[in-house]
Image (spheres, rainbow, N blue to C red):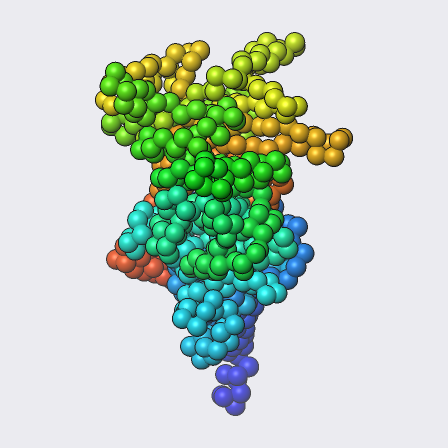
Length: 553
């Protein structure tokens, strides 16, 4: 009887109910937490608390892949748990999942190559190439790219182990565009005049330039204009593979752009010794309404044939001949507007009117990025080009001048893209030979446009861009978010490339914030506080309720 009474007692009933309710709540919390975790992993229910939104896909990335209508596979070579537990791999994995969410044709999958190493064998560039557990593969049909984890980040030097910026968003978007583009245009790169594009080590050293062109949507082809041979250069993501074109192939097929970068020797013309003219081939290429970019610097010796041809496009590089009839290049110096103490890495001034200004119009915000021209040689306009005034009848503040030339029914006009400040001077062999003025600054980069009728009704153009600084394409400037050199080049390629799909995305520097840089000891202290404080608060609240109930009786 006493036991039955105990079972029927108010204390037992309410005590049992409390225990059961507690167990039910705990089980419910566990189940809800497991369910929410699963759904969060599937549908990316995360809040990005990093200062640079490292885990959040940018609107520019969504825009870049919005027109993709072919299936693209992004394959990670390790298990999801391992990817999520490694901070650097997680950045890339989260970006890929975001791209998958943004476009239904993008599919993310994982392969455990430790257990199944042959699963990704078909993505090896050759028998010697390797795929690691940290590799990322982007594939569509027969096209693929294999990226190293390191290539998704930016390092100060090639030997650094600690990245300072995340570049995976741009790299993955560029890869998706590359593997899905049916007919990518070709960029021809000259390499038989001492340019730095010959050996595999040269290609590695020039990787920033090649990556820029690849990201802009070009296929790369090294060309020998003397015998019309070519070498296709393909990025696999981790390296560049060179393949010689078959004899008799048209090296100009699908080409839209030609790059002459840091030549050391002149280009051939028919001169009584040679019956081959590289200059004539360049001219025929530009007759096809294509584009040429030329980068030289003060260390470049005078290349008579090439520079005589560029003069036809209004371009002459500044040089001074002294009393001994020795010619030296003019080097622009501007200590007031330089990022180095010697005054030779000058910051260019944006032009604001004309074709040159339209190239970087999107960059001229309230705080436009600095664009740096290291060791730059000035550019003057050819003597047969004449100053032309553009007048805006409604707003004379928009008036500007440019230079024009007309011959044989073909008009050409040359415009400033970047100029020096008024505090700059030109130095030749250590002697100041010219100073800039408000009306006559030194020209750092110019663009010439030739107009022609493509089909008797539609006007089309050829372009020649000239720059007196090879350092303008230096790796540390192209990968930097501080300087705008990469943005300028992408804008140039957009302007002269005729509707290229450009992955114009910023990389994301790692910011230093307390939550991201706490020590292990601090993490332990925070963990203990987050565990103990709620526990103490719950116990205290429970004691308070029990005391109140006891005295309430």
